[in-house]
Amino acid sequence: MSSLLVDNIGELVTNVAGTGDGSPLGLRRDAALLVEEGRIAWIGPARYAPAADRRIDAEGAAALPGFVDSHAHLVFAGDRAAEFAARMAGQPYTGGGIRTTVGATRAASDDTLRATVRRLVGETMRQGTTTIEIKSGYGLTVADEARSLRIAAEVSDETTFLGAHVVPAEYADRPDDYVGLVCGPMLAAAAPYARWVDVFCERGAFDADHARAILTVGQAAGLGVRLHANQLGPGPGVRLGVELGAASVDHCTHLDDADVAALAGSTAADGSGTTTVATLLPGAEFSTRSPYPDARRLLDAGVTVALATDCNPGSSYTSSMPFCVALAVREMRMTPAEAVWAATAGGARALRRTDVGVLRPGARADLTILDAPSHLHLAYRPGVPLIRQVLHNGVPQCRS
Ligand code: NIG
Ligand code: FE
Picture 1 (cartoon, rainbow, N blue to C red):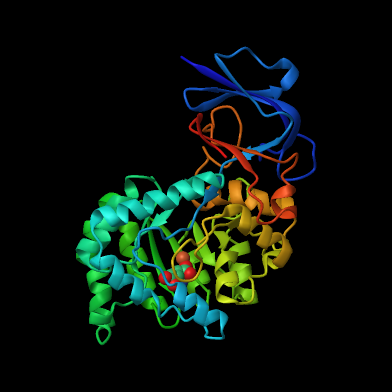
Picture 2 (picture 1 turned 90 degrees about the horizontal axis):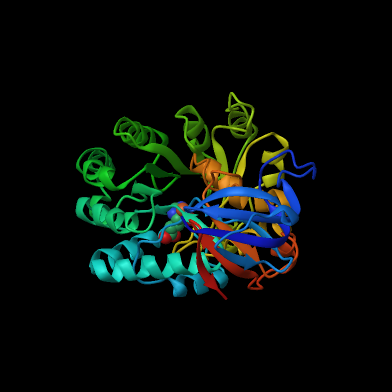
């Protein structure tokens, strides 16, 4: 059994409370970490580091768990750069462009879609992401949703069936029929490749009754629930998500007091936060020039918050978790520590994972070494490529 020691880590973010640093990050100074069989076997002071077959010298830099990007739409063809330019010239974002991407995705070959997914996963990895959730939602036929998920499942265990992204043009006059298709044959074809079911619950997409029907049958088929809620305006999505025990409600841009109270009330029995996580996607507000969600209000109410990219060709074509961390700190009144926690441990909570987003013995050896002495630099040096090295399952991925 070959072992790897990551040595001389100046600042290690563990996300394990109790190191006495007073932040949620569980910081350790001058640390080392031993990897065996893709898992962390030991963490401790560098001066007590055990011998190992191989060694990576972090040279005093900071290291943290790989980012957990719990919300991304990577299976698509084409882009919508012109739509972005029109928005920056004053057009509002309505979600209407989703149908443009649906047309391009249906027309694309498996290999074209596969190449895009792999290119984007590589892009995220070079920016420190080691776990990524990938949704379908640009196929919207039985065959196209199933193939989107089949291709996504080749690169991630965290795959989400989003047949209810929008009602496709051919069902425009028959939304109930489309919901019937999603709940029946489409779910049956998608479920073997999916871990989660999601609905875009929003005016112009799916209302609460449709969302409830789809999420409930998805749950009965063994899928976990998550949903797009309260992105473009107020609505029932967040409360529906809490009622159904969703792992996460995503966007949460337009919340009223009852929404915040519902989330805050979903407290976990073990006191570890809320069972329904609020996943905030500041790349979407950036790219649609919209007001950002109020992270401070959620955190102050005790809601567990995650950050994710929402990487998609329409509303948020960024694959960068460091960019989202910087936005959350600058624009959403999160502290750097809260934002880094939300992008790692928070994302893991949103995916109900305990083996990622945290560095402790037994956890996956998913680790990012920065070209910086502290996690603070992720927000302090926005737009700067600070990812020096990424380990995924203990295997070095890239050195930029
Ligand atoms: O999360 N809101 C719905 N879905 C995506 C946008 C998809 C698109 O515009 O293509 C989102 O922002
Ligand atoms: Fe999304």
